[in-house]
Every structure is written in structure tokens, then in C-alpha cells.
Length: 116
Image (cartoon, rainbow, N blue to C red):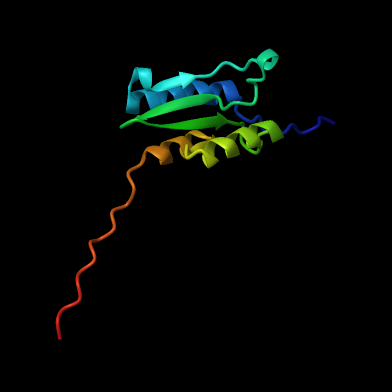
């Protein structure tokens, strides 16, 4: 009897390629900076990407396979970045990445109260 196999989850490397393509198409080629993990210098806990979003702003992105969570050191670094005022994001799918680029829904302007 053959054992049933679990469906394969997409590799992080495939997600990385697709997210880089998506963000470069949206923000420009120079706007996506992949970071190379360097365990020897303690840089393996830093997020995978820096996204330059324009106007002097940036975001740090950690990529994970669906269902995986950042390691303890990665969570610590993301927390430090957030505390310093930078967005620290975890992306598990292209759907999440695309949602970040969707325009925020507009809120209708509030109307001042009419004088009675």
C-alpha cells in the first residue's frame, strides 16, 4: 500500500524570486535590495529584503514558506526594526505581497455638522 504524500509547499527561494519581481515592477529595479545571510557575522537573523518604497521610506521583509514562522532571532530583529519606526513584514505568499501593493481604500471626507 502506497503512503499518501503531503502536498508540497512552495520553496522560499521561489517566493523570493516572485516577490522581488513583483516589487521591482512596482517600485523600480533599484528599490529591492536582497540581503545575503551571513552567519559568521551575525547577519543571518536580518530580514531577506529591504524595499525602498519612495519618499525616503523603506520596509524590511522576511520571507517564509506558508505555515512557517520567523525564528526567535528573526522575530527579535523585526521587533527592533519596528521599534525604530520601520515596517518589518513577514510574507508567506504572493497573495500577501500583492495585497501590500494594493491602494488603501479611500475614506469619505467627513462632513462638518450643519449649524442648527
